[in-house]
Image 1 (cartoon, rainbow, N blue to C red):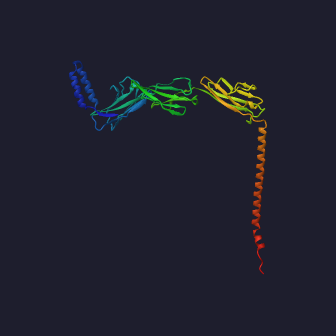
Image 2: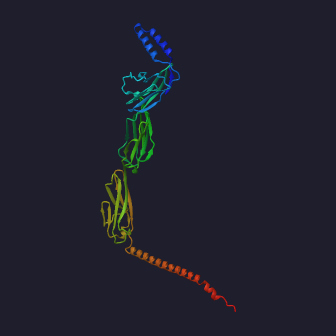
Length: 390
């Protein structure tokens, strides 16, 4: 916003008279009449103060322009657009644009609204006050344009763990340029942005290079836009679909206590998880053939009537289109009485420990009782042992 003092009324009249003298005879009279009418409208004044404020508005909303006067003396107020066309002269609107509407007119203010603001409405608007000398002040309308469209593009719909992919996000046709931020879940990442300008509008494209892991499967990649014309979070997202090789785990389902003895049965279950889910799960015996009495049923391995020859390493293998993985179980078959002897030793140790605990407790109790007994009879012992004097 700025103010300026226009040429005085006499200077305007002199300039208009020169122009009228140089005009053709048919227009000379009209120019002189216009000069006299304008001079009549320009009163003299002293100490006028004309001011206004800059306006920032979002495209499509309403802008309010206010020309205000301090110490008004009923001088004429006029509002002009950036092309110097009169929008309002006092309370009269010569301009045919019906988006301009009069909100208030008095000797101290001319307030006008502009509805459905567009980018073409941006620029300087001039307030003029017809004093002697005339005064002028301008206000600048700045139009904010939110992004027209927000798009996210991912290089691959399905990614294999360990791959690095490119993700792009584009915010189109905004003013001013947007700021793009990247998130993977709740973690913020750093991208690289480029700005293109065309007809005072800006298109921003941000590129993110992302190395994916199996933990990223199902996690959203979020493109978030920050712009003064946008309230809240404007964002778009894509969910990662990550393929990874199987993860294999062997679970012993029998015997429950985990001790494998001769004559017992053994049952192992192979659990394999991957994406895509493994369709082939196999059991092998490392460095040896599978026992003839072993039974294989999908992910399950069952060996009945265990003996020492069954000792060895049993491996579960699983695979999918991404890769292979395995897990090993080492079998050691104990003697048939190993469990009983261990149990007997455990019982013996428990009995011995219990007996020792009882003895220690009894000795403590005896010491406490003796201590209290001697404490109570200390005086009696003293009297009994003292010599008599005759």
